[in-house]
Image (cartoon, rainbow, N blue to C red; front, side, top):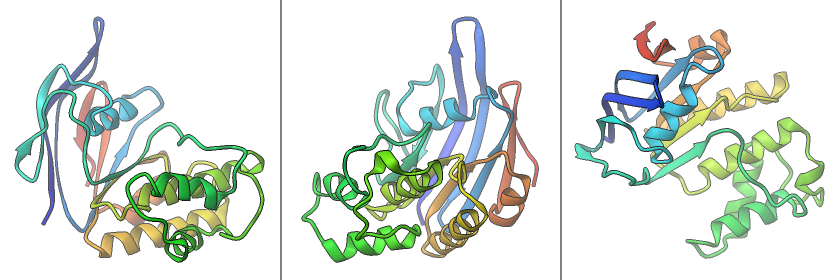
Length: 211
C-alpha cells in the first residue's frame, strides 16, 4: 500500500501565512477532497506537495520517507492551474511527445488513453482549437498517461459539460479501484460527496475535516 503523509506543513508569503499546521494522511485506493474558496490556499498546498513550492515548515512523507527540500513528487500525475499544450498539434501528438520522453511510443496504448478521457485519437483537430472542456480532458489524459500511483488534480472538472463531468467521475472511480491515491480540489459539493472517501475544507490556512 502506498502512503503520502503531510505533517505540520507551513507556507508563508511575506507576512501572510497561507498554510498553517496542515496534516493529512493518504492511502492507496482512496479519494481525498479539498474544498475551499478561491485564494484559500488549495493550489499552494498542492504545489508544496508536488515539490513546485518549498514549504516553510513541516514534512511530506511518501511511503515513510521524507521528501527532501526541493524534491519533486515522483510517480504522480498532476493537474495544477491548467496543463501546457502544443497548440499547433493534435491530442495524439501532444501525448506522444510527452510519452516518448521516458518511453517508447506505443500508438495503441496512447489511443486507449485518449479514448478513456472521451477524445477521438484519430482527430486532426489542433489543440489550439479545442474547447475548454476538451483541453481539460486532454490534461487528465496527460496526468494518467504514465499510470502513476498518485494523482493530484486541482479542479479537474473545470470547463467540462454534464457528460464530461459524468465521464470523469466514472474514470476517477475506476482509477480508485486500481489502488491509486487521488487528491482532488473542487468547488462542487456533489462531486465531493460522490467521489471522496474523505473531504477537508481549507479555510484561514487550516485544514478541517468535513467527513
